[in-house]
Length: 206
Image (cartoon, rainbow, N blue to C red; front, side):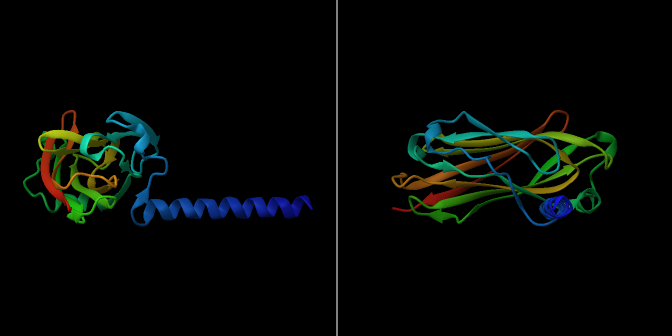
């Protein structure tokens, strides 16, 4: 009986390891627990989740004002290119000048939503480093503004390897979200690596 139990335990452990490897090497990974719900009430609620490609980081965010009662969902990320592949697209990059961050794309998907729907804020950026073994502390930030006032924020501090990264934060709007155009200001920043900012909008239909 002990032998059967031991073999079952070993099999379970093996399957667990395989599952973890698939999450690391496969597609976009979800960080469970990295969500801020309606109960947070305002920008500033914090949760902690393990982040792929670096040390554990804190996803900080919340919604208020025109989006009060909405929900900041779980953070997802994926390394799309390694450092060598990324560098091929930045022939002007000089490793002697250290780390450089560059936002390649910011998207809202879908670009128009109804109250109660979910919009994904997708951020793709390059982390250019002098060597493969360099880990870069990066702060990703997404601010949502409506009629000039901040109504939402989601940010995460994480150490990244060199390469191209894509991350997604889903925002579920409250059922009474005010219609109009919302502006998203996305940024990536690192000490010594500078800061890059891009903007995009999404629309809430009546």
